[in-house]
Amino acid sequence: EDLALRPEAVKKSMAGRNETKTLKQCKDYIRPLFQLCKRRELEEDLQLHLFNIVTYCEQGEFVKANDSYMDVAIGRAAWPIGVTMVGIHARSGRARIESSNVAHVMNSELHRKYLTSVKRLMRYAQNKRPDVNPSKKVRNL
Image 1: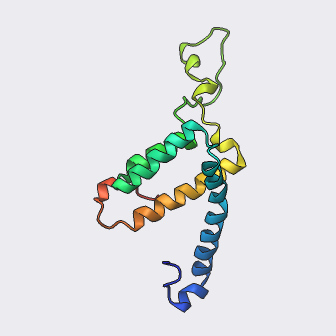
Image 2: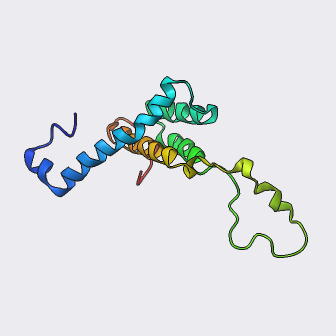
Image 3: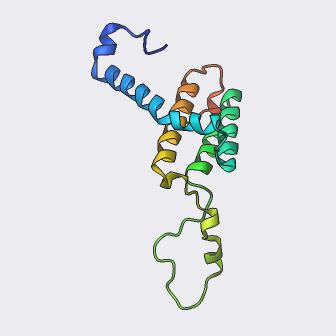
């Protein structure tokens, strides 16, 4: 709707064409997510995170929605920096770096695509809500 209301000069500009292309790409990328929801085949943890994202966006809590997005996108795992096994002795912090804490969602091309679309929709929802306190919005979203 917003794209259709733009002046013709803006539609034909490079930025306008990019916005239109991004919208089409977003529609294509999120379609598999909708199909998983219809077939009730969406993973339970992913479903919970997406529910939280939508709920927070509806409430105008975009910072919390972004936190939930980050949880599903990259997880809360400890990130080893540099070499992880230097000595011959096991380190106590090493136990926290396990595969159960790592979000493998972004490893799949399909997941990455529809999560990118979710992020774009979050940004759009934030921009369409001037009534929300700026402290509850994410900068550079």
